[in-house]
Length: 256
Ligand code: GLP
Image 1: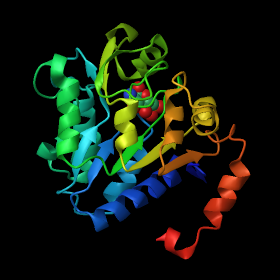
Image 2: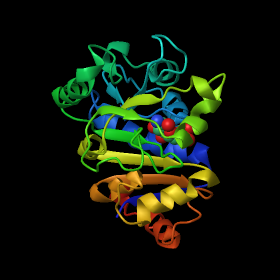
Image 3: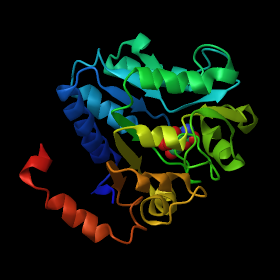
């Protein structure tokens, strides 16, 4: 069962997640982080920046990227990661990869998998969750064993992400994303969810059946998962009282 931490709001959630990343980097300065985009992880990056750690040796792999945006487009995930993660955290830009950032698109998935393997695998993967239950851009129906590949976005996700573009028709139709199997290979998954709109997807991911119809449910196959959710996102969790009790009764060695 995932460790579920229910927090007051995204600020507190970001600080819990930043604490997990800080603990990892203190132990392993060249840790490999899996980086998520979207609005959900922003409070984590902000809290981590405030800790003022030396993150210059950290390596990073973004979860996903749009296909078809011109290089340098402000909403490409390469641009978002540079602006919201690499800059504020003072990561070394050359150590941070985004899918399809070099070479032909046809082989970009395999190349990315190889690059992650060459780096020794992802130590800690930060994840958000979409309303459709997607993680990365693995939309419903994605194979639970999938690896990095090009996918077609659902209309629901294009509509959700239209807020970042001038008009809905500018949202790309395709993406390249780490697969669910790729995500499962990371050593620690940290899934963040804030706000009432995420409550059904989060409940399905944490407590529903494991199914490709709700790709986030694949986290139940992973032995080391921390879910951090605010009260609104946690509202549909059946075992919320147990999660609160387990978190408040952590043993001393689990607290540092
Ligand atoms: C996007 C991203 C996901 C993200 C999700 C939720 O489409 N590809 O990685 O987790 O949707 O986004 P947000 O955090 O803005 O709600």
